[in-house]
Amino acid sequence: MKKNILVGQSGGPTAVINASLYGVIQEGLSHPDEIGAVYGMINGIEGFLSGHTINLSAELSKEDLELLRLTPAAYLGSCRYKLPENMDASVYPLLFEKFKAMNIGAVFYIGGNDSMDTADKLSRYAAMAKEDIVFIGVPKTIDNDLPVTDHTPGYGSAARYVASTVREIVLDASVYQQPAVTIIELMGRHAGWVTAASALARKFPGDNPLLIYLPESDFDMEAFLNDIEGALKKSTAVVVCVSEGIHDASGRLVCEYSTEAQVDTFGHKMLTGCGKLLESYVRGRFGVKVRSVELNVNQRCSSLISSLTDINEASEAGRFAVRAALEGVTAKMITFEREEGADYSIRFGLTDVSNVCNKEKIFPPHWITGNHNDIGPEFTAYALPLIQGQPQHILEDGLPRYLYRKEQGLLP
Image 1: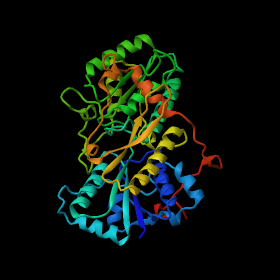
Image 2: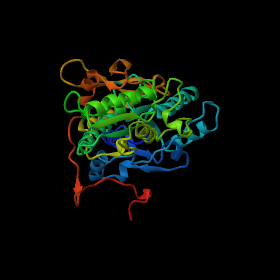
Image 3: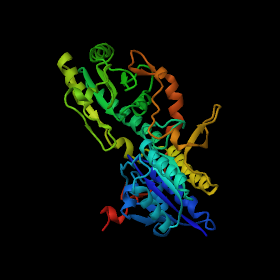
Image 4: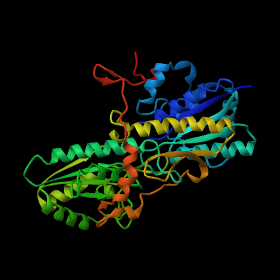
């Protein structure tokens, strides 16, 4: 008897999360003798619990799928729902009853650290209850902070957006002769990968951004102000890039200097505002023109300058996951392994999802240079291959066409 497959998306979206969804659907459709329908969870495991699903294999045309591949954000909707640690919790038999009712043989969960936690718990319950359903995690996060894998889908596009946008801001900041400081706040709670991408904006050694601060190094306000003073002696236009999660030696977040941060449902502090706070410190010390810029969600949802390499790898990760499931693989996450050699290439692998969930891969400390305020050349060699290639978007009236669900309230 053929089994159906089920796919969900969870956590913060990216520019290429739907490329992985596209890969799962396309590979699922290419095995008609083994796979029945391809179903999607609406709003992840939380929406699935409420009975919200969609038959993707029936609902989406070939044209829809091509639009889906280049559509940013999460087409199926997302959630931040944490399954209980206790395997005796009533939610688990309820979920598996729903899986059985839909004749599900494999579940694919596209997401980051917390999403892999969901895949891990479902895998463990299935093993305990001797349920014949496989669970595979497909990685996704612009933070690039999942261990084991070389990088994650979403990061290359976010890095390209950051580098391109910072380069444009640098040009804008340099038009006046009066001294000025521009502070750009970028995403990164504990890992500085996104902020490090600002180093790619430089056109030559000594170019802006002159200073880059990551959460992997303790932040000292006085040292920062001394850095600004030195930078102003080199250039009238100083651009500084900082991660939202920079903190001092005591562990206190810089954004908390003015107000205490709130927390989300996973207990993560919701960070914002360190750029604005640093702006006030610089203005107070030097009396120069200062502007702070927070790129915010643009870093994860900008699709027009996404990386074609990122899109293709995200799609192939979804396909690889389906092929692995057909071989009976379960409780694994797809990994990217970089091949050795001058030319960039990767191969896909598998790791126990327990090796990934609730763990973080920080930016390599030995790649942080200067007075903990710069990025070394090793990062450039690592990141440049990930931002290559320009996708060909389908345009309508000069604007990109994307795929929407009617349930999103975005269609008549």
